[in-house]
Length: 466
Image (cartoon, rainbow, N blue to C red; front, side):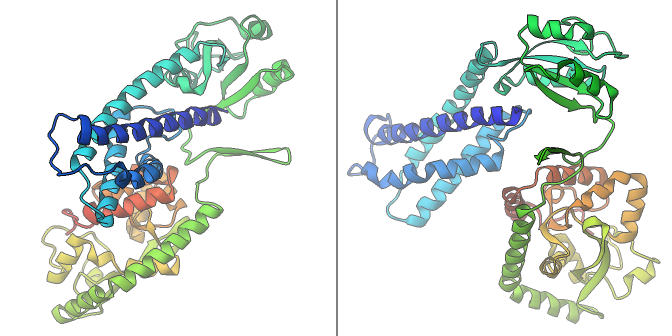
């Protein structure tokens, strides 16, 4: 219900943005060639028709940029809107400028693009401010549903009330709360007026014209059965918000099939067509990169053979999806039988004597990991995902943080969200875990593509790789 309600406001917001930005494009053109304060440099006025392709394709460019930056993502979290506006505008302008350069029909006016960027930024910020003001007015009107919160005394009710009050686009007017029957929690768990006790529930619903009841209670609770006995035959919407604060859950989804309700308490988005599309993306991408970089593979192989004894490739056991072990390929960067010198795998330190000269360069540049592409082709790894740890090291980490296993809901990747954010090596276990879980919870092909693009300039060089 909430997601669909927000999608309506999101789509309206997007439509207003696109219409407004299209008009700003026209205004920027006229400011440049007719009304602007800066004198005209061209001997003749460039026809508006030369910019026609921008007007036609701009909605698609803007939607892509908005998806990449999360500007229109359906979420309770509405902070950092200005940052998201900046990111969306930058991505859109880079795409427009790149396409205009490739067309090479004529030299597009940089001043038109400058006018547009400035005016678009002002419009988008002003629009967001005005839009939220309108939504707040609507949240108090008859267009929204009056809601009652029934709380079992946990902190979930307080958090939910704060989120609803800061999200008028939900279309919910939360007017008060009552405690759950036999509630042992605090008398005032949320910053809302208490409308009475549970025994007066039906009277409260009638007196306040309640249309929606939000229930914050443990999932396995006898309270729920009593609640449905009391108000299950009324016309109010009943929304259960289970108390999962003591549990670590990757993702929660609910669906109904032939009258059976399925609550998925721990799952991922990588199912069905998503799983098929990610595999196709990995297979095509890895094969193309192998073909493209085959000369570089040959040069690195030759350099390794000429500078040290031993094989070109190094294989090591790693945990993959569902903690299934596989042998990961890498270019050899240490002397032959390096693990025998330390009685097992040990992370390399600064000036480690086991690392060869060419190996030090390969590790710093991450080129030693390029043979992972063969693991991707085999289906043991993905282009993007949590980076796999060596098997003995993973066992040690798992002892201190059992939740670390959640990373293996996905195939391990050649690059990942943690790596492009600077968390590489064994010194950032907690940070890598947090970023990997964020990636799993927010996965999409667009997110994968974003990580691959960012890897080009942020993910290769590893200053802490020794």
